[in-house]
Structure formats: C-alpha cells, structure tokens
Length: 161
Image (cartoon, rainbow, N blue to C red; front, side, top):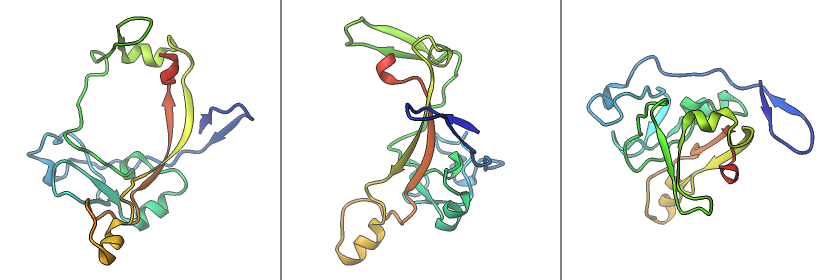
C-alpha cells in the first residue's frame, strides 16, 4: 500500500503488481532505447523509435484502478534518458535563492521537504484520435481509446525545491 498525501484524511491505496517485461523487445534492439523492457501489450503508434504507445484496452481494464508502470501510456519525442541515479545532478537556475545542483539523493532524502504521494490521471490530448480521423482527418498519431493512465506520483514538491 502507498500512503496518499492529503490534508483531508489519512488514506492509503493498494498498488497493482508490477508487470515488467522479462527482456528487451527485438524491435528495440538497435534503437537508443535498447535497454528498456517493454510490456507485450503496448501498442506502438510510431513504429520503433521514438516509442509512443498505449496499452491494449483489455490489458488496461484488467490492471484495475491504478495503471502499472509497464502499461502506462507513453508519449516521447526522443530517447528515454538512461541515468546513473548516484551520479545524476539536476541543475537549477534563475531562482531567487541562486543556482544550484541537486542530486537524486537530495530529492529523496527529505532535504527539500517531505516526499508526497499524489494520485494523478494522465490522458493524452490525442486519445481516440483514430476514431476522429475516421470522420475528419486530423494531425497527429492514431491514438486509440487507451491513451490514459492512473498513477501515484511520489516525490518532493517542486515548490519546495
């Protein structure tokens, strides 16, 4: 279970089991994303790379209220960054406190405030565009009806950094 951050009442929700793929898909073997294991039920909308996809609707429905990360809608314009958690730094500039570098450990340690968990629904603006294109052609990928995901995002609030 994960505790949900709220000012109203204490609440926690059961998270779905992970459904990670066991290996990298052969379609990704010679792309910049060759390190990512994609779920077999993800429907590719743009070919091999960049990876833009939605889950098959029955898989999304079977997952329940919260979407497992492996079935979450993906909208990319390029390669997925592969970072070293311990070495990665976030450069922050243009703020009144001055420029600084923040490590991933800084963000997870509570240094900038307590981590919060917030349920979020993400829906692609192109959701069901495939059906719209049957009536009148639009610009964009042929997204089906599953370009949506419910997640619990956990981390420090940006306003605290």
